[in-house]
Amino acid sequence: VSLWIKIPLLAILVLVVGALGYAYSLFNDAKVTVNERMFEPVQSIDHDLTRKKVSATEPINVLLLGIDAESGGKGRSDAIMVLALHPENNAMQIISIPRDTRTLIVGRGYEDKINHAYAFGGVNMAVETVEHFLDIDIDFYVAMNMTGLKELVDQLGGITVHNDIEWQDGPYHFPTGKVALTDGDMTMKFVRMRKQDPSGDFGRTKRQREVIQGIIHKGASIGSVTKIGGMIDILGNNMTTNMEFNDMTKLFSGYRNTMNNVTSYQVQGSGTYIDRIYYLIVSDEEVAKVQKLINDGDV
Image 1 (cartoon, helix red, strand yellow):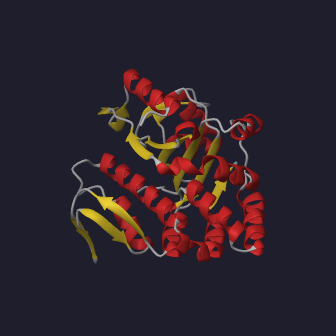
Image 2 (cartoon, rainbow, N blue to C red):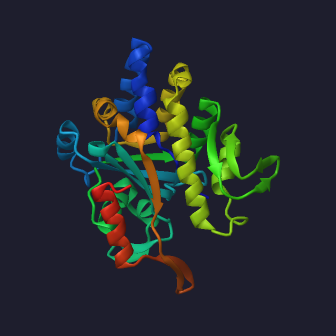
C-alpha cells in the first residue's frame, strides 16, 4: 500500500498562494492553517539555514513522505521522494526511493528498510536517514497521509496521468496512455496496484510520480483557484511540514518556474532476501549517481 504523492508542496504553492489573487479572506485562512495546523519543525533541519538558501534562491531539496496510517498508530512512509528544485535552470527532479531500500537507520545503529525510519522516529529520523543514505541536505519536508491524497484528488475533481500497462480493477479500467483518474477512489487503485504489474513495486512508484505530477498540473490550473478553500482544509487536516506560510510565498515567487521542466528518476538496486526478509540493495555507484542528479540538477 503506498503512495504519497502527497505533494502538496507545489500544489500548495500554486493553490494556497494563489489565494493572493482570489480573496484576502482565503489568503488569511491559508496563512492561519499553515502556521497553526501544519507547521511542525524538526531538529534535523536547520530552518535558519534553509531560509538563507531560499532568500538567495539557491537549489533546495524537499523530502516528500507519504504516510500509511489507516490501520492505526504512527504508520510507515510508504512513499519516499526527494524533490530537487533548481531555480538556476528552472528544473525540478522527483527522485523516488523504494521503500524496501536497505540502509542505515540513523539513530538506531543498524540497517533496515528505509521506510522503517519514520515508524521508529517520525519525520526527524526519516530526514536524517535519507540525508545519510544519499549524503545530501534536506531543506524542507512535506508529510501527508493517504486519506489526504484521496480527498485532495476529489477536491480537484480528478487528475490526468500517463499509464504504461493496461489492467482492470473492479469497475475501473486503466488503458495504456493518457488516463483520467476521476476521483480519489480510482486514484487509490491506480497507485496501489502491484500484482498485475510485471515491474512490481518499481511500477507502483512510477505511478506515484505520475500522480504527483498530475496533482501539480491540475492544482496549477486556473480553474482550481475556486476550490482553494476546500484544499486548505484538506491539507490542514492531513499534512505537516516545516514550511511556514512566508516560506511558501517565497518559494512560490522564487521557485515557481522549476515546474517548467520536471523529470523523474527511481533509485535502482537488486532485490535479495536477508534472514527471509526482502530488501533492495543499492550499490555505492548508484548512490553516487543519484547524489549527482540531485546536486547538479541534471535533466
